[in-house]
Image (cartoon, rainbow, N blue to C red; front, side, top):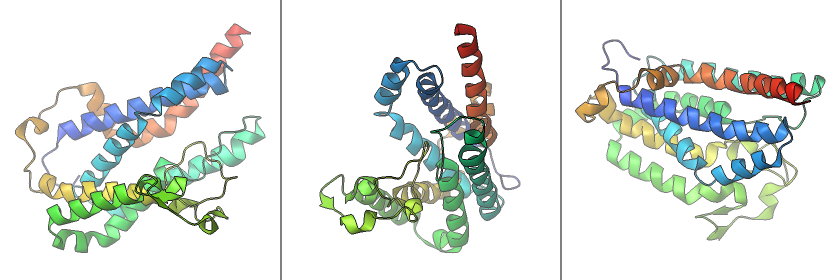
Length: 252
């Protein structure tokens, strides 16, 4: 955070809660992948209904915090670098040890890193824009483009041409072929717009105009997870895999 900025503990807590919800969701996928128990997939698929809520919460908070960061551009490069490390591990290292099917080509860290970089570069324009106008436009664009991964806009009301979806090199933008697979996938479109929505709301955080209760700490544990969300996310999957492999060995 910027020097002398008043910490908004509720943002840490909500970000920590969102990360924990993502970890629990991944846990059930690992139950299916590693322990080969079908009920894990069933629970994972059921939770997919509410998962976008936690995604959006996490990304909005990241956008808000971009207005409080000392250097959003530098932070974005760091997060993107961590995403590339995950790609290297899941695409190169894990298959070499016999763990296939978990390749991540453009996941949450790739998306967040690029969102931060783009926002950092556009920060002078963002700061000159009325935050209410910017937030409203960003939210509209998010809902308008939300179905891009399913070849549509406006939740299926506007069909996009199949010719856009012939190749995978545009996957960062949300356009990919039917053969594309990524165990964790967050495209820039539409998620950059929800990040920008948070960035514009961050004007209120910057001016310390959030409700007073948000500046009070309610849970040390959630605050800790939220403040260290990058490393918690980086380490959670190796830990889950190790636990699942241990359980699998015990069962066998």
